[in-house]
Image 1: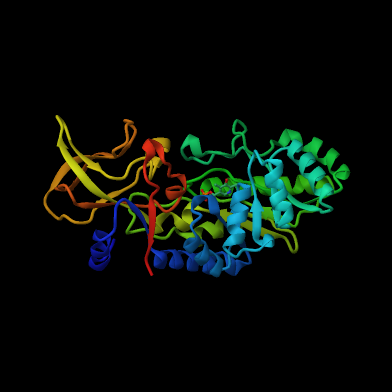
Image 2 (image 1 turned 135 degrees about the vertical axis):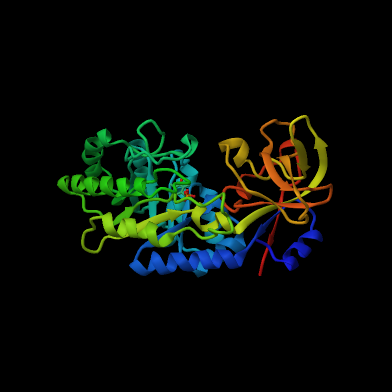
Length: 382
Ligand SMILES: *Cc1c(COP(=O)(O)O)cnc(C)c1O
């Protein structure tokens, strides 16, 4: 977990704060290099998972690109030293201004999510005297076997276009003079730990490739998105996801054409485990069936438990007394502001420190000022 030195350093910091283990991040990126980049795959970090500059610096040094879902994310990626040709831009609701940001930076790919968006993009590209590189996001209707709020690849979800729209797309393409359709894009959901959905996805990709070729469209890029999950329970046993098995699924199942490039957009699996939310116990309250440990971090710092019923491990850093039963709750005036219910923890008292683990992805980026709270800070290891 954390060594004594690190815990000691936590005691001199104002809580709550995010702590990022950059050493773990580097080791995680090394695995991606060894098992993904080594196969010639292109990996884009989904910047929406964590947009802190020291994190982006490690990602850039490892040779990854960036996957953006807003104009400001494009700007942040550029600020962090990435070039336009390393950036993909997805999202169902890109505004004209955001599209313009992408055009201005000559990004690698607009991942377009509707036929109307293609028309708008074509018009804006024409005005700028440019040709936009586009991957069309297809909804593969693949069950991701994850929480329904983070499932994105079913027909009922708002993302991408469904197969029945494709004849219309093929009709439209010759008229879209300022668009170069270079790829197809998929993203089926998040926190997917079972590899079967990715195998299913590969099979859909192969079918789609055939269909595009039958309609005279040759694809340079296949973008299979992200969604690979992390182990929220055995955090210290599994700090790095099994990228070898993950990339092998695509290696084994994708039927690639000569010269075709494969792209991934991984977020959680890259940064999830390197971040913890460090918080101090404010009060212990004995309840009828449990003890409430009220900590100074809440859903304002980490909303995932309240939003997705996400389970983040809570470790006590400053007590090794015998265990008692606790509900670990935040200070915010919402019942859902609860991190854990009925868990066994070493007996804690006011002033003890806890670490809420696996919080590097979709943690700090979703923090808010609800209840007029101070914005949470970040602390980095060497
Ligand atoms: C969020 C998102 C990702 C990253 O998802 P993870 O589960 O964090 O890997 C990739 N692609 C798109 C289009 C996304 O919206």
